[in-house]
Length: 115
Image (tube, rainbow, N blue to C red):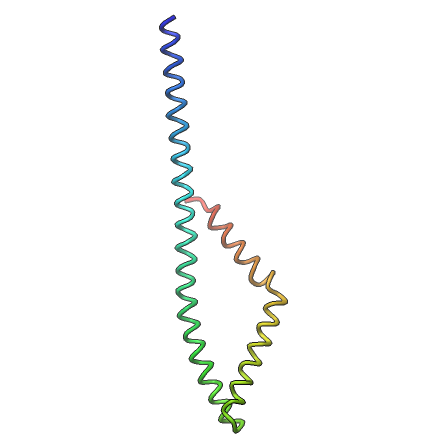
């Protein structure tokens, strides 16, 4: 009788250890995936910020150059801003297939990637 009780206790102890280990492993996988996704997003954000600063300065130069060509400096800014309005409208129309789907797919691939 005592032998059966000891065996059952050992079985419960092993099941408890297995459950704890499984939960701990799931936590570690979640932390790993979160860190991977966040580091990818932050690195892309950093590159995007540097590119945005570059684009901003190029646009100011382009606006001044176009304004000089057409005779009034502010006309150059109107022309460049009109171009960006057109780009914004096009992006709004195609935002799901050009922006939403690639970002969603990137997140899914990062989350489901095996090490």
